[in-house]
Length: 388
Image (tube, rainbow, N blue to C red; front, top):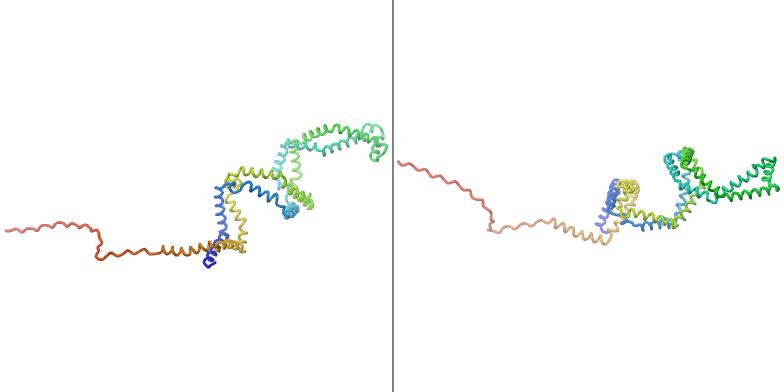
């Protein structure tokens, strides 16, 4: 690279670096953001990116990419920091969840009558609930028949004898207890359906909107003024680690399910159905993105990093690497050689003196227009002398 090209390269490098100095950087960012926003007003979203590209991005980076080990390490560590934060002891539940929001949630839950009824129906229809209510009925009826029935009350000492047989496993009482159990079980099995239906109706009647609102009031009175630290003590670090591990295992499985793929595919398609033919500026406006906001955020986000890149010489190295590739190319050398010969010639043509006009030939007069002669006034006639 000859000296002239090197001097031009240095001037170009310094020009580019000046764009990243503190005050000039703000101006540069604002100018570029303004140009970008002008471009966005003439460009549609679908012209820049397609739904297929977004779906491919999700598939590669969300579904197929292995979960980085750093996430598995950071998640429980961050959770432990939250659990142990000193701010938990200084923060009440009401500080992070205002009463108005809590009441709105409770009211919404209370208004979901059909959802509530469906949940209760599934609850009482489950095998767990059926088994529990059967056990409760069986134990209650059996205890009544063996200890509180009329026969035991009428016959002195019989109740004690029955209890003795039950708890001491007296052989003489086993036939009676077995007969009672058989009878009670038969009764429960024959009437369990009706019992479940009555239980379901009773629960539905109990949990109406007014009752749920009252329960919400009671819950808020119990927890609203309590410190967050009281609830953080429910979990310890080991419990949190287990929960994080369970959550990560769930995510690793869920992201590869056909359901997840179908859901994010529908969401991406719906987004492009709405905004695909819209100008990018319209999309930005709908999401509250303005030119000044973007410029300000970029200035705040990039300022310190650009200063560091300038001070360390990294930015100059990268600018120089890009420009040296151009100025050292055969095309650039050829262009500069051509300009080196054309510019002096062009300057010579523009500074050349105009031609001097030739002198007129000897004896040759140049015709000039004569001014018309001014007419003289006629002379007065001489006076005659008188003769005597």
